[in-house]
Amino acid sequence: MIRQSVSSDNGSKEGKWVGGIIVSILLLATILLPYHQNKTKSQQLDTHQIAVTELSSEELAMVAELRLAHEEIRNLNQDSREFNHQNHWPNMAELSELWLAPFIEDKSWERKGRHQWQHINGAVYQGLRREKQGSSSVVLNSGSIEPDIWLALSKNTTPLIINDEGVFEPQQLIDRGWTQIVFNNDKQASVH
Image (cartoon, rainbow, N blue to C red; front, side, top):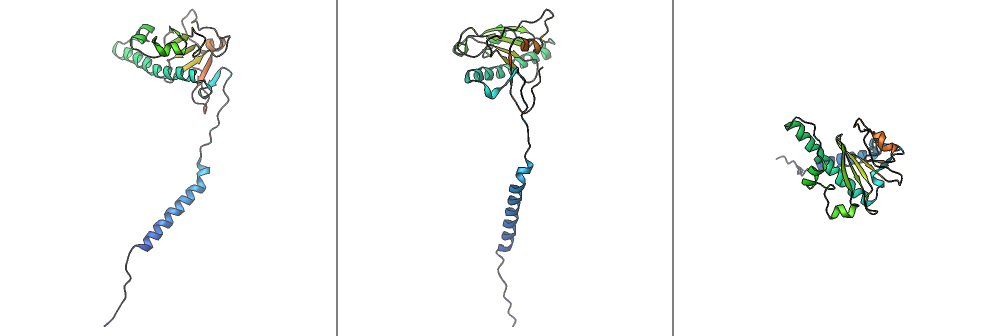
């Protein structure tokens, strides 16, 4: 009679191998992680630009409303192009009828400075502050996919007036002392 002892296979060898591989992967990832980081350099802003992170809470509240309004304004324009075959940008009466902030005169409008809104030309809207407190006067250009928002942060800023040809040029805002808001400082914001 031959006796042979057989050890039980409880998976301890495989478990040790799997555990060792997991530890080695985590160790390798920890060592290589700093070399895999994307190094972005924030570029210097132009003198007529300001990063959104540098704005006061009043300005940020206005910018947040304008970003949402920008989407709605672009959607209204796209609907008019698709269904009516016209390049129609909504005027102030249409925006007010839709209860689209900041174009409606409600408690938020009073707190933000009672802006007098004007549809300047095409996709350009201007809100001039009538009170000393609240957000600065503002220009919203919805002509591009990303909102182009300008604030009157200095005392010598003058309102935007479109030239005789009715063409909007960003240089007009720069010449009048307006400050462009840059939402992503990792890349240089382009003047549209």
